[in-house]
Length: 150
Image (cartoon, rainbow, N blue to C red; front, side, top):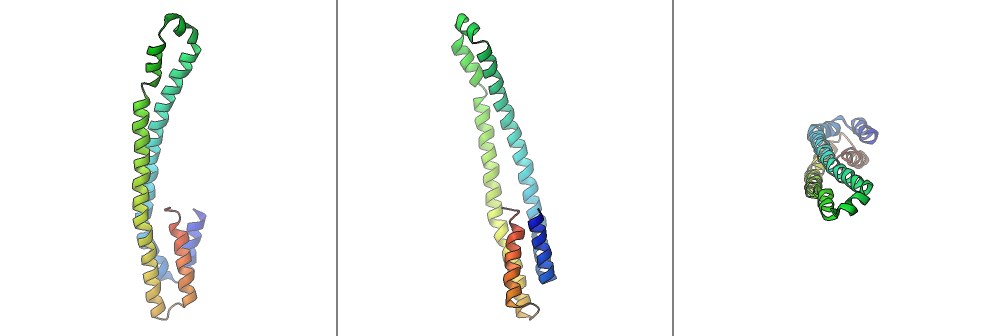
């Protein structure tokens, strides 16, 4: 978080208008990160719960291997241990869907945010308020600032 915050401060030092352009889009970036974090945590927790059930059942089966062998219930135990595998697959796919959506949304939002900063910087350059070096620096700082979204 320090690097993007420092980059926004750098934008302010170059030109407050370029920083304001970035901050205009920042709520969308924050909303994207918040949604991604919440959904990832939910999907990850569900995945870990299903994985834990499988591990617990496998541990039980290994502890009682001799009894299972003597009772000839190996096939039933095999099905019991692996029964949550379907749920595990569902949660795994959900996790990757969350990642995919976030990647798609950030692939759209981050360049637009960069474009907004560069457009404002270009207008400020045209007005003579900043120099070419300032615009280049603003583009680099904007890239660092949107890096938290990646």
